Length: 349
Image (cartoon, rainbow, N blue to C red):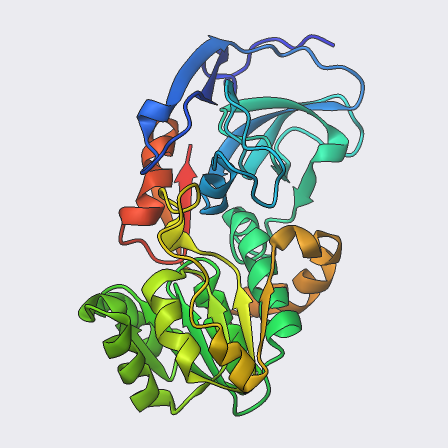
């Protein structure tokens, strides 16, 4: 099936960011090549042509660029389109279940258009929430936060839950989910503005600016003074934050390793430090569990049935930071590690 050009096919140009070079420190445009070519509008049976509207940048992308094995046996292959979650709009369809104008989610990567089999797409209902939430609160970050906290963290009413990276896409949801479980929550974030947002908007009981401390001991003393001890630690950051929290864990504490963003720029291939302070795990008979969003992909509907009504009613705060323009994707990925955004970072096409 061949389709004529249309207004939704801007000059029938198809652009892709091709991942070409392994970064050893910060990732940027120098590690990619921008490829421009004519848009192929031919569709085979059950194929759909989509145009990207919102493209995700996430910390896990930097993990996948590690030269050494991670949760994937091989790193992201060079000379291929950068993989990413995308919210797109159908502009042509050769299947009965999707029509022009429908909104969909798919792992179509950093490209302006994609020809994909219908089975690789999930239809989005724009009546529930803004479609961009399929990349955030109603997507992978939401799934990570919900199952990571409730199934690995198992918070009880009255527990002290500490969240590092608490102003990020996952951390900001963990703060709110923990409060809904009856826990008292301390969020660790960078900067006074983020900390004020955690307490004033998200409802955290306390917030600490890690940038105000020059070592883990001082940060640990501040956390201890506020909380008196930690039952659940949801770790998105690693580094100084984790060194500060582990000595404060209580009996049977649960530590969830969701991310180690402080180590991603160079620390994955040549770690800055090995496992530390594990004697406290022995003393308190605590547990450490790593969690990945993919572990719960088959339970996505379960999470949506619980969380989507909170989003639709306005009970759950979700913040999205938009960067405008397809050409900004490499710099947007880099800004996850250097920027001042809150919540989910998204590039709008």
